[in-house]
Length: 313
Image (tube, rainbow, N blue to C red; front, side, top):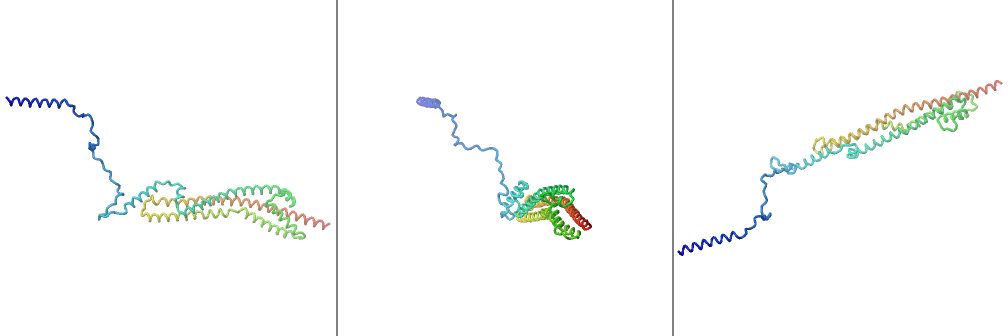
C-alpha cells in the first residue's frame, strides 16, 4: 500500500512539473540571431579565377630559370600600340621629327614663302613697267625731233627718257663733227648700255627663283635620307621589325621631300612665266631705243642739211 501511494506521489510530481514548464513562456524564436555569429554563406558555384597576364610574371626557360626579357617585350608591344594609335597629320609629324629634318622643313617653307613674295612683287612691277612703256611709246610716236619727244614726255622718269637724254648729250658733245656715222655709233653704244642696265634691273629676283627651283628637291631629299637613317637606327635599338615602329620615322622623312617639291615646282613655273614676260618687256625697251636712234638721225640730217644749204647759198 505504501508503495502504491509513493508511485502516485511521484506521478503527481511529474505531471505538476510538466504543466509548470508548459506554462512558462518559451524564448522568442522570431528574434533573429546576431548576424555576426552566423558564418558567411558560401556560394555553391565556384568563382572563376582570372589568369594573370603572361607578361606580368617572369616566363620560365626550359632549364627552369626565369626569362628576364619578358617585361621588355611587353613594353615594346605597348610602345608599338601607342605609335599606331597616334595621329599622323603633317603638323604632328613635323613636331616629332628629328632636329635636322625640322631645320630642312623650315628652310624649305621659308624658300616657298620667298618664291610667292617674288611672284607678287615681280607681277606688279612688270605690269606697271609694260603699261608705262607702251604709253610713252604712243606719246613720242608723232614727234619729229628729240626736243619734241622730250616735251611730249615731260618730267616723267622712264627708260625712254634716259635714251633721249643720252642721244641729246651725244649730239651736243659731238658738235662740230661732220661724221654722222660716228655720232650714231656712239649713241648706239650708249643705248646698249641703258638697255642692258634695264634688263639687269628687271631680272632682279629671278636668279633666286632659279636657285630655289633647282635646289629645293635635293634639300628635301637630304632631309628624307637623314630621317630614314634615324629610322633604321631606331629599328636596331628597338630590336624589332614591326611596321608600326618603322612607319612614323619614314613618314616624317618623306614629308621633307614633299615640302621640297612644294617649294620647287612653283618656283620653276613662276621663273618660266617671268622669263617670257621679261622678254616681251625688253622688246618694248628695244623699240624705245630704236625710236630714240631714229629721232637722233633726223636731227643730224636736218642739221647737216641746213648747213649744206647755207654753204651752197
